[in-house]
Length: 567
Image (cartoon, rainbow, N blue to C red; front, side, top):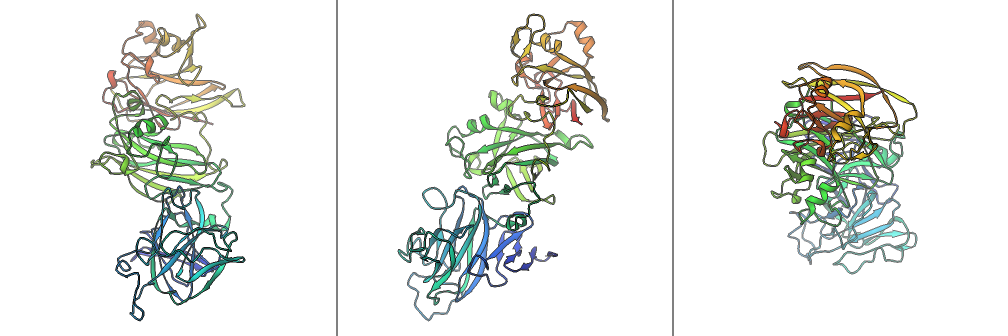
């Protein structure tokens, strides 16, 4: 089948049985062919990739309409027929007054099996219907496929055992407590006199269905997990299976953006450890849980260098993106700088989201644009693509990267071969001729074993610098401005490797000058640096950027950039 796109209204349209793919770019769906009123004849609102679904419009003619859609869960779903067209209709509308809209609708929600979730007839002093979201209601916690039904009052949902939702009370949310409430929907029965006219149902927490979700053909890459965007700018992973996300930095005018963080939240509302966005302690809770996605290259980076990160995310997880202005996660963790802006607007002082847009990407995932609120030159474009273990592979050595402020390390443990081959590219934009190297560490905190005493030394301990260089591997890397230098090396497996940079010197010259404890040697682990500053940042999987000036210098971290790729 071919989907045609009208340039005039941005509408894709396709009908095949009960499947409809007419979805406006604004997220407004309009019924074309009459939707059925059973599970088998319901209209499935589908697109090739999930898209936010803001409203459903249609018309009743003595029947009910039933739609199949995807809900993001976390009690974010709501639905209402209240609009400018219906707001002025009094509860006791006199008979015989001609009107185009459904005067007294009733809306219903069913799960994927057709079991009743909740329904609404009259609410908030109106003859119109509202299914509310949020705690205290019945909006679903679980994401997944659901059916949304609409009829005129009196035309009720039935199962094989009887009426699913009670007809009364009219003015409050009802649960499936009718005689047929324990069985799945089979159809609608009753008085159809009110089932006439046009309707629009406004939605939150709803998405179109990605094609694979409806036909079961998901090519084996992600058994039941789906990536989507929520109304409050979180990323949602539906289902119970974990999935892989490949995140690509497509374009950037980073400006004042130092890093982009990903923060796992406990709910679709963005809560962390029970703390709501905007509440006291929220920022610190987010910092403690944050993962570094990318540091941002000033001026757009280097030609031919495409930063990518790969994440494994649990099913049912929500992720919040955040930007760090003029700093990094390390700065935020130490309290020495950086200004955090969240995707959830009400978590920020200015009530503006760091996410300017989220939309399906050409690669079949999500394209997310980030910007610093109140800034005109700080923008990043990220692309999230999704797949299973056999589709998106974790980069060898990168599995611990981004987990904390000093995680620019390479993990070669757990590999079966004794050695692994690495191709290395070195980029440079600096006046100094720097040298980069790697050394073996005993744990992710950067501890090393002193080869002379056998003692374990932490980065802040006296003698750490000498012991770290004594544990270096036999590889030194240098670069030239305006070109990429290529290296190849064999790495022993079974080790954790951290990194260092020697400023404007070869390693041999540095060692012969006995310059330890001076500003000529910096490590990934801040406690080992004489100026107490961060000098290494993560720009992607196995992609490290170095700052060569004392005190953090100009904080561009592009003085030397090293990309390691393992065969």
